[in-house]
Image (cartoon, rainbow, N blue to C red):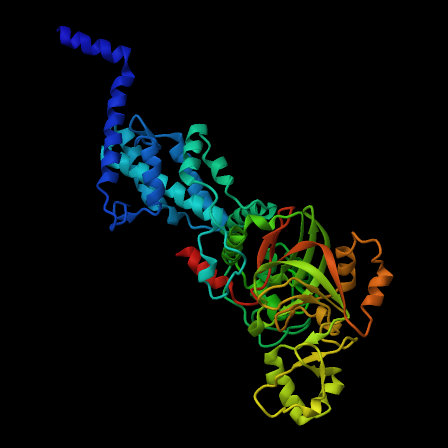
Length: 546
């Protein structure tokens, strides 16, 4: 009798005492699970491998194996918040299934059923779900901070300095648990650039559009550009897609296969919005863009969110030159404001412009063009053999590697190579144009003018051997030399029209970043999609979805 009274009294005075005992049992369960783990066998939960083995050991050891995600044997609000953030990772372009979502859902369903039936959750299951959720947090955190895919393993190498983790994820989780802020803690890992969060908003909105999508997105194929008045069997599908994207209101047409004037105006609006030449013609690029479904666009955006995560923090300087190869555009930024934008020509498919960063340090006005050895061997030597006057006609000369002139008639052009350098003299027809902007790098790539001005009007501007040709070089030079008041517009113009080179060293080094983004979101949250001119997106997408 007295024993029963004592037990009732203890329960009424110290209910936490018995909860502590249960929690201690769970601590022991977690501790034993980790102690029994074998180094050569992956740590796993129900045959599902855990990825962050090191962080898990450190994290639970530091907290004396106390569970994180359950309390008094039931799931906490933080556990539900983490599951929600895992689901939300699809807006980062990641796959929630990569973070144990399916198995987490199995546990949550089981625990919720047990709760309704007032059945206690088994200690093994409590330990399993704790380890599983912690591993999901660590794995997701790493992917948000530095990306899921290692860019160095890709065929289209991303040669910007590899980003390394700067955050201790076990400390981050401990802080998140203490402050009860899972979402805010994960957000600290996002790239510190506005377009990343805006990109998430675009993917979220596109996902809502996807849910309403009932169209047939089978690719429309054309053999030639379609103009107003012409007919094509794919016209009904293209008309539907223009209406789907809100470029076309319902209207009455005579022939559903005819490309009519109403549709023409809608195509122009679509082209303008998607960075295409707004001529209203249904060419290959426009039709390819109209073939993109909401799912396709989400995939494209996902690939580029990953590329943004690869960017190292050092690229957030106040002054910067950005070249987005896929958009054929150069932007000059200062204090995060875009002061100058211009069209560029980039490397053609088999002479792709590389992706890297360097620092611009000088400008060369009225430059020589020192021809690469490969061009001399493959193009110049055969041309001289056919036409001995070729060099003179192209305003070229042969020189030693120290710059001393060599009589071209004394050169043996019939061999495999020549022990000299061929260069084109400064002038209006110089292939580098009137000025070049130098940022030393291992690829011998730089930004330069071009005499072929008409090429900037082309929609496809992947036309160079790898260097970046710029449409408005004089304006660009003026901005870079703005800190020196002696470099007036007139002086720059004179420097660009000399018969000898003039090298001007900049008073600071300006970061130059060559990027490849086929999607980005602007400061207003508008998404922009571009062609994958080098066919690089699919490789990244496949790696992301593994």
